Image 1 (cartoon, helix red, strand yellow):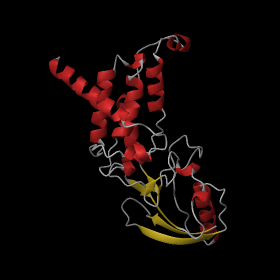
Image 2: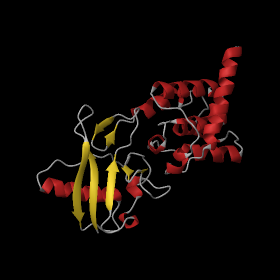
Image 3: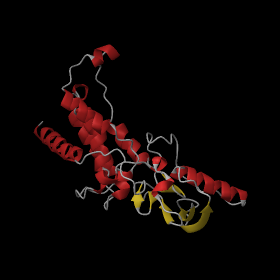
Length: 250
């Protein structure tokens, strides 16, 4: 395959950025999108040029690191797929691809296609854990949990924190991420003791990080590579309203 790549280049957060155009030939249809970028970087290094910085780690669709906007779509045009699991056979020979970083005020750009998503870490640190003692692993596993609750909790826990939900939202909202991270604990008996505090603290951390408000456009769920449902946002809103009411009445 032969491709024309328009890639965002920016030396640092305080530098001005622009699109750079590269021609790449000999791309295998069976290679992944990140392998294609590896090939481009090898070409750039051979020409004595600076390689393109982009995030990657596991390359197995698990870690959520590969945060790329491809032709206007977070993670590219393939549904339920991360950038690292997107294969070049999804594109046409001779096609022009525009590659950008995730765009959000709460995700400041570091360099080229790399953004700082530590705002997600601060949301998780605010309440994405339990401190209630449940004993050893056999004791915790012995706690009876209704199957619908455990299934829903596992659906929420599938979130890999990639940030596609934020990048796709017109308001750069992190409600889907926060709802998933709070929801999978709030639905389990082990998380009930700190449910109200967890909900209030995580939503507060989300607001403090500078994410926008949710307007229920639904783009977040559509862009999510793990298909996290909008139902979790509705649940977070209910839990937050209840926690606020309890706080006012206490």
